Image 1 (cartoon, protein in one colour):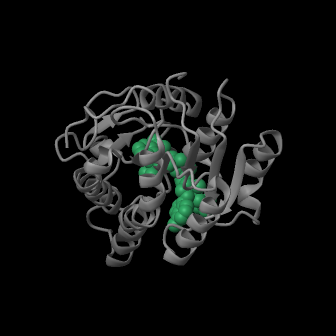
Image 2 (tube, protein in one colour):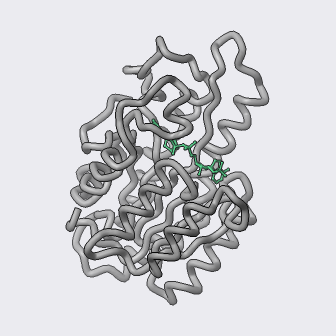
Amino acid sequence: MEQLNPHSVLVTGSNRGLGLELVRQLAKKSNPPKWIFATCRDPAGPRAQDLKNLAAEHPQIVIMALDADDPSSVKAAAAKVTECVKGAGLNLLINNAGIANGSTLETETPESMAETYRTNVIGPMIVVQVFIPLLRKAAKGSSLKGMSCSKAAIVNISSEGGSITNVLEWQRGHIIAYRCSKCALNMLSKCQSLHLAKDEILCVALHPGWVRTDMGNLLGTAPMTLEQSLRAILNTLGHLSEKNTGTFINWEGNLVPL
Ligand code: NDP
């Protein structure tokens, strides 16, 4: 984990589940980032209480509103980050926010397909578009060679459920909208990696494992704890380089087939 040393990190959907644990483990590192932008839809509401309690113990955590479905809130968050980092840019952007429902192939609806695509694919697309200038600034201002998550990177939290080759846990649930959205997110990550390679901005899609969260428990009791998943993910992020950009990996850094 000590190899991961970004000055600034932004996480979407950080008020619960994987996002909250990610912020917790980043803040507890022996060399925490100077800025941890912990974003969520409703910082003032009761669903952000755990995040607020965590932020009260760690001054690096800055809580901000960011609704991945609302471009104006993404732009407002980018303006606040710009103000905080004072020309330094943003090193690590983690698109973690996501939604899922338990639909089957026969019960899936156009509305839920569209809603899921909006949050899980259009959301990360807009967030990256808006934050590209800050990521470029971080890449340009860094003395680190090559690509890394300490320099400038986008991590899209995807799912092996969206792997056409593996179709993880099909017998447990069809979750059609979710699988299709994560498959599209993998393509988006690849496209981002191709476009941003010249700027030395690393882009990966990452499957966090099947983890015990509200979403993870949709398909039964998930085998992994949040602590296990995020400990492995932070270790993996510390080892990524230009060799990994454009790939789909799991929490341990192993390639997942598309
Ligand atoms: P949870 O359902 O526990 O948490 C989802 C988070 O996303 C919440 O913070 C939620 O906020 C937020 N969110 C949802 N929609 C939006 C939006 N429009 N804008 C901003 N935030 C939003 O899920 P997990 O923690 O399990 O999942 C995190 C990521 O990991 C997701 O992308 C998921 O697909 C992926 N993943 C999870 C797996 C697992 O086993 N848990 C397996 C594979 C992938 P709010 O409280 O406001 O609803």
